[in-house]
Amino acid sequence: MFVTYKAASQNQKTLRQIKLSRRESQTISRKYQEKIDEIYPLYVYLVLLDERQAGRIPAWEGIRLVRERIE
Image 1 (cartoon, helix red, strand yellow):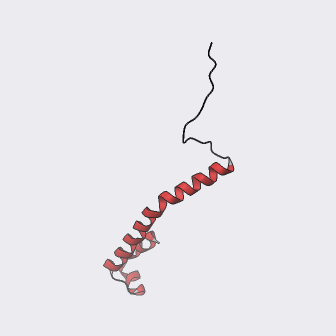
Image 2: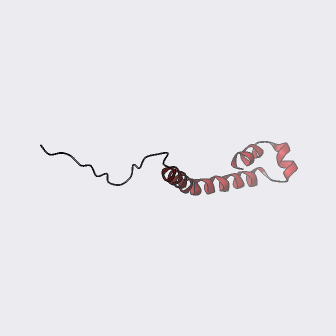
Image 3: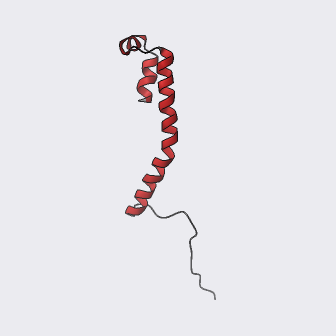
């Protein structure tokens, strides 16, 4: 949606058809971008969690315990 409103804000013909001013279109575009910025970290976390649970990526977080032989 962000891209749609951004493109629409630059096209006067489109703005007239959807009855939005350039400023209103830019405001909507900015609000969508803010929401995307808020949601993106959660989305990345959930995708990584899903991939980890499916066994497609190894665990990289936390402390790794390793046994070493002492000679």
